[in-house]
Image 1 (cartoon, helix red, strand yellow):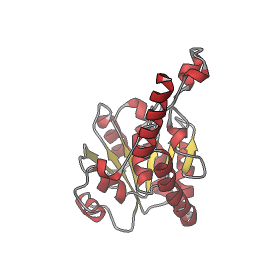
Image 2 (image 1 turned 90 degrees about the vertical axis):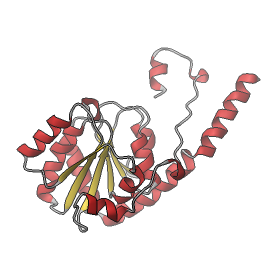
Image 3 (image 1 turned 90 degrees about the horizontal axis):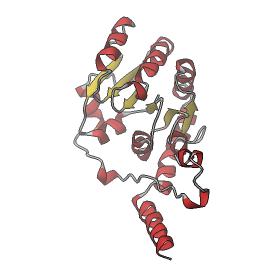
Image 4 (image 1 turned 180 degrees about the vertical axis):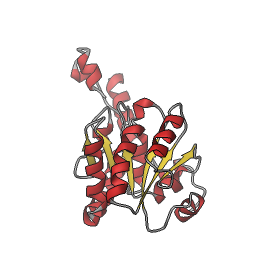
Length: 223
C-alpha cells in the first residue's frame, strides 16, 4: 500500500506502514461450525470455500465463479459460500444458474456471525481486482485457514505465496482454478499452510503489535 505514496515521490523515510490488527474476541461468534453446514445444507464431506465481502465488480467474485465452475467438474465434493451483499448479486446468481451451480454455490447474504463462517471453511478465496488491507484474509488466517488471493493491493502482504497460501494474477480464472485444486488435493500442504497462517497473523497482526508500532511512531514524532 505504501507503493502509492512512493509513486507520489514521497521520501521512503517519511512513510510508516502500520497494519490492521485482528483478534478472536473482536469477531462475533454465535454458532458452532457444524451449525453453519446444517443451516446452509452443506454436505459434511464437502470441502468448503468461502469468498467474503461486498458483492461488487472490484471484488472479482465472477472470476471466482468461473474458476469454481471448472473446479466442481474436477473435484465434485466441494461447495462455495458467497458471503455478503451488493449490486452484483443478481449477476452472480444468474451466472450460477447458467452453469447449473445452484446446488454447489450458496449465497448467504450478510452474516453477523462471521467467526462461525470462518471456522467452517477449508479455504478463504480473495479474487479481488483491487484491495486495501484484506481483513477477510486476516480473519480467516487467524483461524488457521489458508488463503488464495490475487496479487493486488495489500493481499501479498498478508497471503505469503507458498507459505500461508497461494497468490494468482487477477482476472485469471484458470490460475485460480489450478491453485484451488492444488490445495484441495494436497492435504499435507493444506495442513502446513493452515499452521503457518495462524502463526503469521498472530506474530504480525496482533493488537499488541499494532499498539507497539503506533507508540513507536508517536515517540519518533515527539522526538
